[in-house]
Image (cartoon, rainbow, N blue to C red):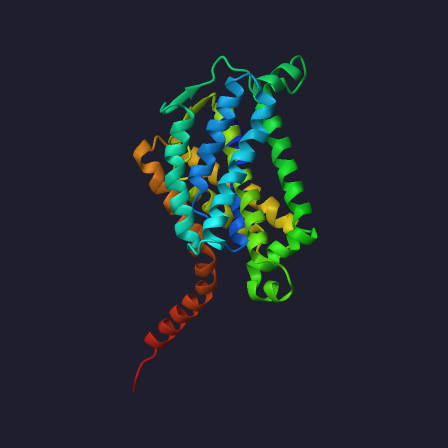
Length: 314
């Protein structure tokens, strides 16, 4: 019985990890490739959730995914415009857009903080119907999320090898060199942030349809979750590895983060402590590589201290 419970925990963590991996892939593009810290992640995630929910409630379940991505791309365009054309710093631009999106998301729902989709046809209910009477009928959510995540990883790996993708990577590495090569860094930054926010909004759309519920605060803290997952993924495949391996590492990092989160819930940890758990995971992920490099030096110092203390003076 305990084994079945832990398998259920693992499956739940995998499903949530696949949903969140799209946001982590977005951060991988904007933060790791483009070298832009976009703090509009929370708002874009919720924007994708509300647009996807309202589109599904209107009877267009399949259309909800591209609609959410289009809304996210608009959000990314605004962030990029503030940053590249209006002289606003990237951190401040993300904060401003994230703050504004809270009101925008409420406006879309007519000031309703929640939306219920219990009786609404979603892509998950459609997949459940398609896979009915098959051996994998019980895993319909996992299959949908795995397919969408795989397509996102393949798209990102392909895109970053195109001329535009290489220009985006070069912009993140050395914008002055890109400018001297007759490439407009304003354009590459805009395209990168639009794609990044589109992936984030897609993640929010999937989360809302998976849970059959939209909440105005469902995106709160997503930037922390994505950053932690990104750093955990970097432990497996560092920045000097090929892009496909790093993208796979991002997905693994998202799963591991959610697995730790699920185990914390399993240990009957109070709900108000979960944010502290997220922060602790971020601190460990950030400081882990540094502490790993410092550990041999610390051991050497301890050995030297032990040897020096054992000497007897004449």
